[in-house]
Image (cartoon, rainbow, N blue to C red):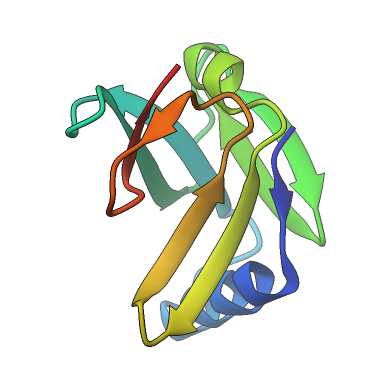
Amino acid sequence: MITITDKAKSKIDHLMQDSEMGSDYFLRVSVKGGGCSGLSYNLDFDNEEQKGDQFFEDRGIRIALDMKSFLYLAGTELDFTDGLNGKGFAFNNPNASRSCGCGESFSV
């Protein structure tokens, strides 16, 4: 399961409202090969379920993960930062053995 902080929920709600997405949309979180540490995080909005999707809900946000991504992201917290050191979504992944400096890729 992925959990979402209050800041991340606020930003996701804002993005969905700005894009006029209906209640059938959900947040798709996935892991893809690439990045300087080997695996990269991917966030997107979707309204079509894929075979093998695992669904969770936290703070009213519906989240979909494919099975491969679920194995890498179980227990991860999604946060949003808007400070001087950078702005954007941040993954606090307990499964990552190391992450790159930008926080967009990791390895296990």
